[in-house]
Length: 212
Image 1: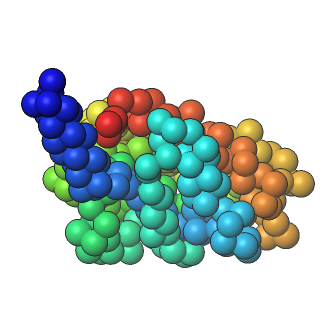
Image 2: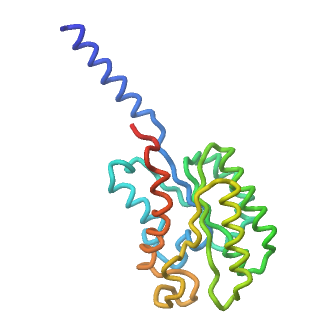
Image 3: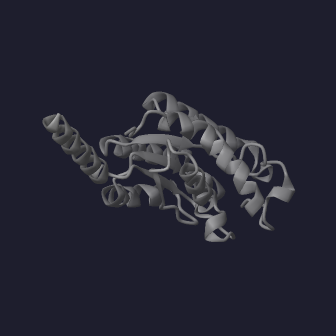
């Protein structure tokens, strides 16, 4: 019995040490002003709301959200920044939300597709999983770019076999009361709907991941 007691003591010490040294899983949000929380307090943006939601469930409480989004970011800018960000934070999941500024600036759809594809490849090479997030431009920008955007996201998600959220702003896109005065960025209350959109695709990626 004495040896059994020592055995369980050693076992408990070993499992405690293993838990202490297990790296904290990281979700990297890599996007533009729609993810950076433009015009909002830091705690109001959907990535911060995501961190709060994760902490309220024992199954996801250990996950840490790193928001590396920058207002005004294009796909080209994102591509240039991504290698260093991946090396710094070593994420398990990357939520890639870029393309809106490419559309607003009338940049090449071909370049957007190429840049997003390279970023998805970089994420995979870093042994992380990607969630690709699409966006639709306001109706006054015309339907041509929106069609090209949606085709780009859908084709890339299929080719790279990654989950896709077709539109970050689904459910609020046509509601003027859900946007700030510029008509482009959601108000604080609308960020909860944005979070729900992301959560619908993100939650299945968390199931079983980094379980104790």
